[in-house]
Image (cartoon, rainbow, N blue to C red; front, side, top):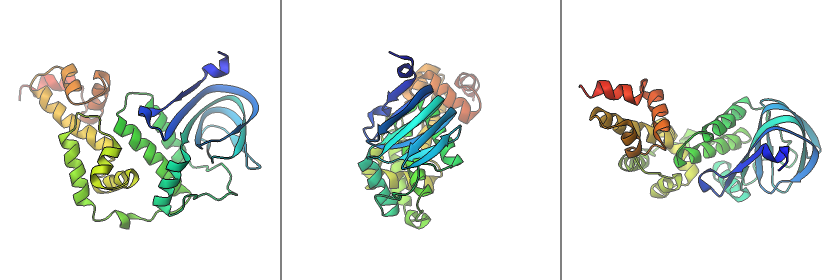
Length: 273
């Protein structure tokens, strides 16, 4: 395996067929033409490069953000380039675009690849950082859907909060389900199906009503149960397993982040109350 191949990593998060992720680290290569079979959403972490697409050239430096549509030829000349790509199945993104903005092709044929959107660039960097550690299937699905949705809205328009009103009873059913199945590996498809909504609309409505995305709410419910178990003097490893966290390290990190102290420290104090 040559050096360039060793610096590329492809994977699919939780076997989600609509998405494939690619990370390249310090990649240097000549200008090589490629043909996109899927939507390519890219962001640059370091290095330099030149992206050529639709008769336009975009300089790639840290923070650059770009979108390449399927069925298009493109090339990139890279020099020690570290980048992240989210590859999205065309039919999935087109269906989502039709639902959000009423148009399966929200971008004009004449538009170039660059967005120069710092918010989107930082969000996709955050997405890859979260995927590098242990995260639940629900969180991975929610992050991917958030990212693609923000991208679509950045190039089109938002129909506003009017479409989201009146969803309190629907979201209450979803919250009740998450509360009852807090330790399970719940998927966004399951929640959307029980709410009779698309995955996109469910995620958006949940955030609008609750103030948190579904995966973040699930973590809060898990931590609430974890605190009760720790107060009963169960071991940290047992509590992590019983409340559905990926492993003890993931549990400890989430607990410290949200509660303010480690699970072990909480166990020592709370059990005396």
